[in-house]
Amino acid sequence: MKLMESLYEIDCRIFRSINKHHHHKILNKFFRTITHLGGPVFTITFVCMLFFFTNGTLKMTALASAISLTISHLPVAVTKKLYPRQRPYLVLTQINVLANPLKDHSFPSGHTTAIFSIVTPFILSFPTWAALFIIIGLLVGISRIFLGLHYPSDVMVGIILGSGSGIISYAIVQSWLVDFF
Image 1 (tube, rainbow, N blue to C red):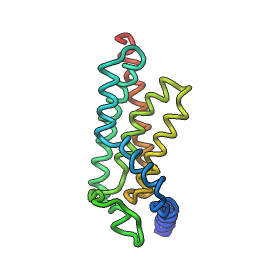
Image 2 (tube, helix red, strand yellow; image 1 turned 60 degrees about the vertical axis):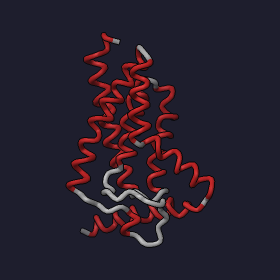
Image 3 (cartoon, one colour; image 1 turned 45 degrees about the horizontal axis):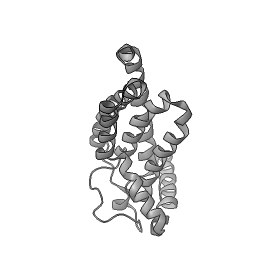
Image 4 (cartoon, helix red, strand yellow; image 1 turned 180 degrees about the vertical axis):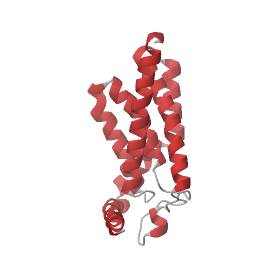
């Protein structure tokens, strides 16, 4: 049990070190904007637009991203039910948080899962752009902590779930559908 308490303390320290910058005007605007890249409106619209309006490798990658986005949220939904962890702003004191924050469970981060589920197939298809995709994904994850909505461990599990579903979806599309595109 001491190990879990120690891990939680580390989680809280990292959370506070990121969240404390919430009052920085430029960072606040930046993270309030970039967080939406992991939201349902952007992620769904992005992969659908690429799938319907491109062809070849880009279309195949968009399909892998769409499949990944879909399957990645099954474990997110189940995990949120099995481990109903409260969001940090509900548990910790002196936390900076948006007006009207989310009320559902914190673990794991759905936004982080979503962004990594769609960027991972692009990383695999277009490795020269991998650094950009990884940075975008990490910034979305950091934004969730900065905005007071998730612990770092919520974000880490989101990265794992999203990346894992992205790798699986990419492999499925590559092996089964590569001849169609």
